[in-house]
Image (cartoon, rainbow, N blue to C red):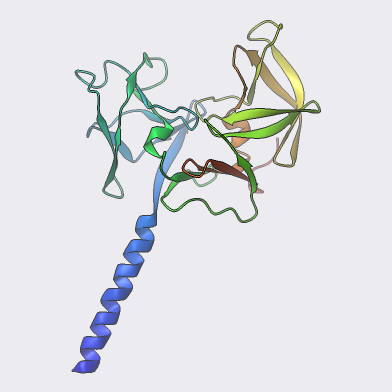
Length: 234
């Protein structure tokens, strides 16, 4: 009888440990829509909608007509994990994009890893796994150092950009496209079409980020990139 009770206790402890391990990470699936990351398994104030990940946006942005009354506080529910996080959204006309862009206020005390190949965003409560990654520190929005035509400059990791790379235009005309040699985390991309715009720093979009496994630890303020061999350079 004692053996049966002991076995039962060990089984219960094992299940409890497994549950705690699972709760450390939550997988959220996404699909690619207009080369943006559409979150499939979240709701905002219990409303399904077209939600996109904005990895470099400090605040979640919501289309004003989407949430009645434009509440000051909203709840992002991670439906497959029965978890929720509180947000203080701002309201911006997103009618040409979707219903909301989920900013890093949703993950600001933790971390996420974006797996483009498997279509998964892993919400990591105990930080990222850095083995094999090139690691960068950042101060405000998640950013890394890139080399563009031999010049090293900071670049934000911005999943709300569907393109390759946006560079500060300086004295050049806004919107002008140029070809550049770009190096990211030791990987060289020859003749990348980049756009010049009125931005304060360079911004890397999904066409380049999708070549990597991307981890961002918002709490510890470091980002990691690992070149994913499953994705061809071109």
